[in-house]
Length: 548
Image 1 (cartoon, rainbow, N blue to C red):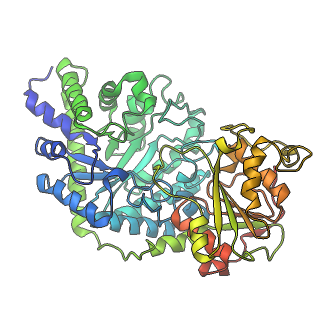
Image 2 (image 1 turned 180 degrees about the horizontal axis):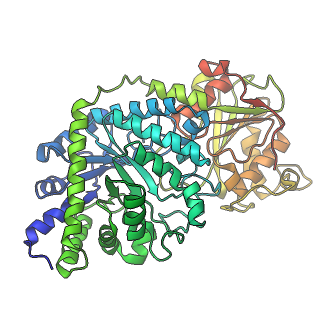
């Protein structure tokens, strides 16, 4: 049992926490805790108005503790916090993987790093290093660079080098790999199958590349991986954190947990219990505050950590080691900020390099040349899937707005599963054989039926005009495929724009942006409107459309 004074234990326990908070200025409790040993905080969209406000917020934090680590969950792409109110002006991982130019990936990440460093952010919970090998994955998808381990590895390494050259520590996630699952760890505990040899050939490849690239932090995934540990989730597993990540992969930086209030661990081990077990297993920092963002939550964790040391459940040496690693990362961030380049030039539209990259990521599949640009202002029907909890509810998406700016007179409607209630919602998998015929509707016409009322009204708005159908992860949603199939029977000339993973390509003209970012939407809108740089881009492939 420790002989150290409880006050020192409380300071050590605070040092390993990375709590969030509510508000656009630091609340008094955070400032007080910084004086009592708190080593880090994490920012979310609720803390951000604009860059100048973030700079003032972080300056207030550093007035209390100059070396405080200020983290953010900013992947660029669909998961953005720094641009959550407008959508990211940089493409996400999947778009960068589609381009497959590691130098471009590094440039985009460096651009982001310079922006974050200029406003006082020093740790970014990115890149996502998962291999999205399961197309039905509900939480990763376009957050990954792709499904090929070697492609994901080279872009993970490039992203790490780029971000860190911009002055911000990178954090590769979600170790040992969240790609091969249909379960979201925000809600339940995913199980990652496969043998150890399969993991070595797939999931672990990008993390080895991240370590080799000098990544400063690695975030654990709340995942059960029986080939590595049949009993404990990765976040709580000494075998995975100590044996695999530390010893085999040789990682010496900070191990950060994914948010400890997530149900995958909190439902099984308790909120504070999961934090204590994670530290005992080898984690160095406890992320909390996406959902529990008040002083009571931080105090509950701190007091539980102290009690675990006093009882002998958590060795004091392990806690001191974790706090030391956090301190070493803090020292790295201070030096990196001192050497960081200035804030990049940002136009009213956002990052110029981001838009250039998004334009390169657009891909078109058409059954005949000459289908684009559109002949006039279109009617846009956007199909809205259930929200991915990792993506902020406030983050806008869709191409109707940028199209309207380029083609005045553009109109739009958005439909969800509840609007189309006679087709199954939430189903996962590919479209069945003969889907276009089966979903064409009863003899009254392709848009007849209960759901056809909402759909026919939406499509009717395109009478005599181009029709654009906008989808996100069409392959994962039966109701959405049904609606699109019906719309295409009525309007086979419609253009389908996929803002998610283009695993199911349909329609005479199909445009894939590889993400629902503001940059990707603008790039697609330029292509459809025949304006800007994207208009000159040749079709990525002229081929018969895929319907199954």
